[in-house]
Length: 154
Image 1 (cartoon, rainbow, N blue to C red):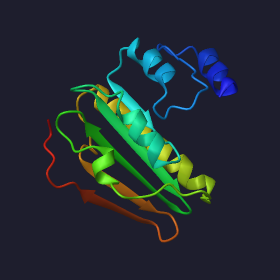
Image 2: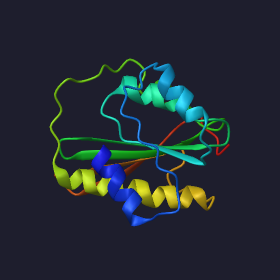
Image 3: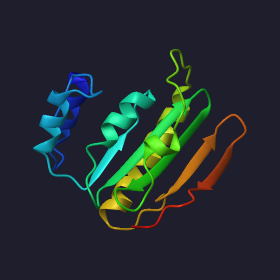
């Protein structure tokens, strides 16, 4: 994490990078640090549901959450907006964290690229994945959308 942070700082991008090398699951240190930040979009590509649900708590009304996940040859991205979308904990209700997950690097690069593109779209007020999953299957080269029911564009 420290290496990634220092590389991003060297690029000289116009944003504040706050490395937090801590577990986020119901950790007051995490929430206290985040409460001091102002952001329009939060992005996660965490490797378990418990962390995703904890991370989701930092998103306030009107802010976007772009969530991505990968496993094996598959990946998915969804954009949610607090107050206009159902929550990740509602979407993934009842699913348990997996202990060992294999993943190919190519799907990671694809999902990361789509997430960063969607972030720019959210910042400009034109998200393309709001309340819908983009699911990618690199084994068969399938790209599919799954629309969420019960969500508004909020």
